[in-house]
Each structure stands twice: as structure tokens, then as C-alpha cells.
Image (tube, rainbow, N blue to C red; front, side, top):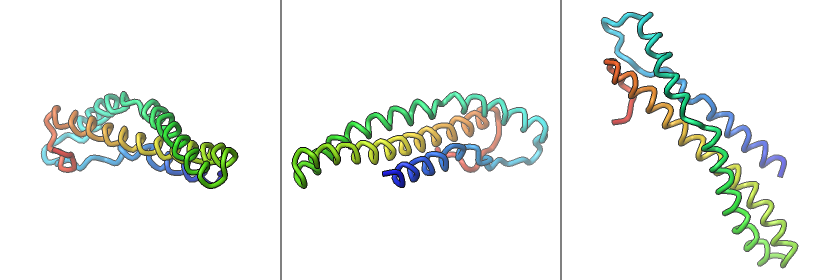
Length: 130
């Protein structure tokens, strides 16, 4: 189980700053200093998306589902003891998976917020979803 937990931590940390990839912006006729100020301004809005809350809810929901699935699966294999072990493993695996999934979704929202803010300020942003 420790290897599984480590894999989850690595997955979560890999998604931690993905939205910070620089947007692809047409800089024709744009002051670099003004763009940097506007990028920081929009970054502040993007930071308001609470990734830790999303990951926490994902972990809780995943752990609840995983415990149930693991308990049922374990009970078929080894009765009560299998159910307990299965519930623990399922909760851990699905909890980590749920946290990572929700963290990735929050990162995508952060990216949209950043890019949409830049568009609202008049920039031509090529790598935003429409």
C-alpha cells in the first residue's frame, strides 16, 4: 500500500502547477511590461480556484466508493477479513485516484480562468478552449 500512496502523491504533485504553462498570446503591438502586469492580474483570479478543496472532496468521495467496492470484492474472496482488507485498499486507491482526478479538473478550470481573463483584457489567446 505504501507504493500506491507514493504513486498518488506523485500524481497529485505533477498536476500542482500545470495551469502555469504560459498562454500562447499574440504579442504583436503589445507592451511586454503591460502584458506581464495583466498576466499577474489574471493569475490572481486563477488562483482563486481552490484545488485543495477539490482534491479533498475527490479523495473523500473516492474513498467512500472504494471502501464499498473493496469490501464487497474482499468479502467474496475471504469473508469478513477479506472485506476489511478490501475496504482499506479500495478506500486508499480510490481516494488517491479521486483526489488526483479532481485536482486535474481544478487545474483545467484555473487555465480557463487565466486565459479568459486575458481575452477579456483584449489579448488574442490562441490556446484557449472555446
